[in-house]
Length: 280
Image (cartoon, rainbow, N blue to C red; front, top):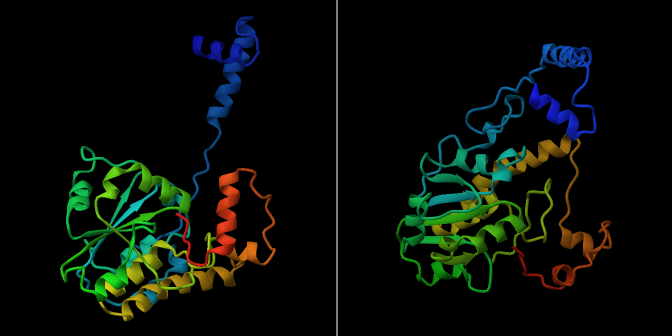
């Protein structure tokens, strides 16, 4: 009972009193403990697309996994695991087993993640992350600066701020050749807000990268089919189209308070003036 008394005292209640008061408290806690616990029943989930069976997207997946030589490593921020409308399970469902590895975490090092560290040191590995040191993936392929070998591609999965933080704070991610996508595409993932019109979801990034590396344009269309179906279904059932922050700013529709931090103000201004920025 000493633990119980300590909690009561910390909350400004008498921790020592008559045995009658103690008995009443014990009875009260006993009554609470006896209350039935409602266990929320989880909806049956499709084993392939990982969606609830009632909204299964398997009809929009390829009948057979796409044969690709490239191996994807999706480094996923832990917060993405709890999101309902994730795109990575759809990506994995479209590819053969062993071609899309998902590694969850914020910090990665040689001791805890030896396989990922080895992949980062591999000359065949590319990391898809925009920035001043990034090279255009499509141009590298066209100029044959990337050998026709089986590549590894690392993609960071998270919000833009999470991805930036993960890239900067994990030195092993600075080892592979850094590449970016310069195709001017508008994201089809309209049920989640993007910073700019050309910022893509993880699935979209993978679709474009695979179509370039495998030199098969149809890969992009096949991989985007379940994403379009997901967004269409959500919109039909009450979801709203999420315009990018760039779109809202340009059209005077941004209804949140403007930041006071100078760095954030500068970033917002850049969203309105730079058509090619994808600000991770």
